[in-house]
Amino acid sequence: MFATESSQHIRGKITFFSLLFLFISPAIFALNFNSEKGLLSISADQQKIYMGKSVMIDAILTPPNGNDVTDYIIIPFVNKRRWGAHEFCNNLGKASFMIPLPNIGNAEIKMIAIPKSDANWYGTDDVNLLKTGTVMPKFGIVSNELEIDVCWRNFAKKTTTESVFAMQWEPWFSPDFNWSTSQAVPLMGFYDCTNPSVLRQHVLWFMDMGIDCIIVDWSNHLWNAKHWSQRNADSNIILHMTQMMLEVLADMRDEGLPVPKVALMPGLSNGPPATMVALNEEFDWIYQNFLRNSRFKGLWQYWDNKPLIIVLDTGVMGTKEGTTESAFRVPFFKQTLTGKGATEEFLDEFRKQQISVDDEHFTVRWMSSQNQLTEHDKLGYWSWMDGSLNPIVTYRNEEAESVTVATAFFPEYGWKDPNAFGRRNGWTYLQSFATALEKRPSFIMLHQFQEYTGQSEGKGYGENKNIYVDSYSVEYSDDIEPVSLTSPGYRKDKGGWGFYYVNMTKALIDVYNGVFDDVTIMAVAQPELVKKDLLFSWTTIGPDASGYIVYIDNKLVAGNIKKTTYSFPLRKLSKGTHSIKVVAKGVSTRYELSKYHLDTPLNMPVPLIVEESFNVE
Image (cartoon, rainbow, N blue to C red; front, side, top):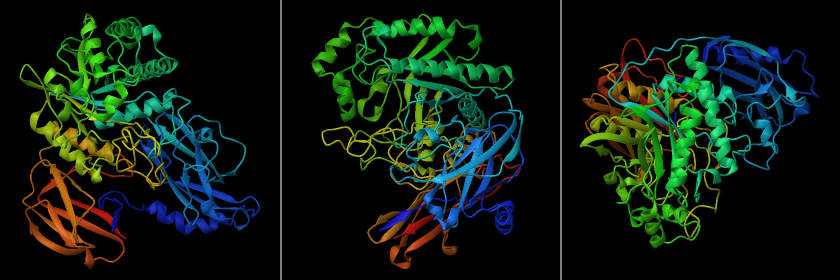
């Protein structure tokens, strides 16, 4: 009956620069235009930025011989190497880019426009042309060149707080990763983790958010192995890319930057389980190759006086009290754990035969998932992600030790489960974070920075191949990394969330740490159809509002309501785009929660007003 498109009212709109560009563009097009070759003109909103920030670039294409502008893809390059999300022209030949620049010095930006292909959703037959680091080719309609000066910036050294905020981060983006099911396009473009510039930009964003620890996910790398030496080639690639991240962190530390610490997350069972012998051998390899390497000294997250290692173990092989039955409550756990034909009886017997974990060099914490069903938290297990708006807190010695909050989540039947919660314009993230704010555990995991991969259509888990996990669509995914607002994804989404979730994470961590006492964060979810009405919902973190004022299409419809929901008759709305604006009374904010750029907290609080658009079809 209706569809939604999110856009925050208080986030950046069209800049003066963009308007000026529109006026002067006809003159630009009059210069050096050859109708047989076409013209691609680009211009930036600034010529000087700080490292890790983004430059906004407008592009206008006039194709050769009157060809249709919508048949072209525009691909950016920085210093003659691929960098930045690819974009498609609108029907006026325009496209906009937000290009992050992590490296100090001169950044020379050029773009090319090439005819797009309908062979796949990302618009070209050669996906390698879209991957970061690819050398600029000598074909296509070539733009003018922009020079951007990227300057150093200082980061305040983070003060000690009562809780560690840890971001789950994936190192599995190898040069061979094909991005075929990505729900959105990262602002850097399709990257791999062997590119130091990619890793540096990630770390800069982590510092912007206030992240204390990076959890490096190795979880699916050791299935069915009796010994660490039996790991496959893909595991070695992950080890290599992890070492590259450690090198980048060490370089940035040497620059004087307050980089986050690191905790590794190997796996024992998230598929056919490995032996405890293999895990202990892996621990020794990590100790010998990473911990004893003085280059990485000071980069490790300590917990109980030793470097922390978190082991993903959905089959609860790490404790004799575990039962396979508890893991089998989750259908896709059962499918992956029995991938080699194992039975529940076999796995229970396998657990009994395992030796103890060797924790001489590490503090070991076990991790499962879907703890609202498995109840593995009662065995001391942390969680990768729970299928609940109130994520499960794990206690140790009667103290809250860990919780995992998420931008969105799925329960046991994946993203298409009716009890899954999508992003809902940040509503889910705030609701999930409320548990951390209430229980204040020592370790708070943020799920998760980037994944971009899931099951293609018809290839999900379960007997009917319809259980989709990991990443599904823009709405039904849990990534935080900034992505293009306009470039399409695998399931036909027309752009993603920009900087919204990075900025929301920064705001939530600041609220948690008491940086300001006059900040409330609010998110307004897209409406749900309930009978013949649209039901709007919103939620807040921080001091409570005394009431709310609601506008629809800028017309006052509720002057002072105490609830955080509002129903509006669908029959009163025509087909097309509409907006809801919610004003929170008696509270303020200092965070814009922009989609378009990294937020800097405002010097003074401002009224808390959030506007979202939605479509009626």
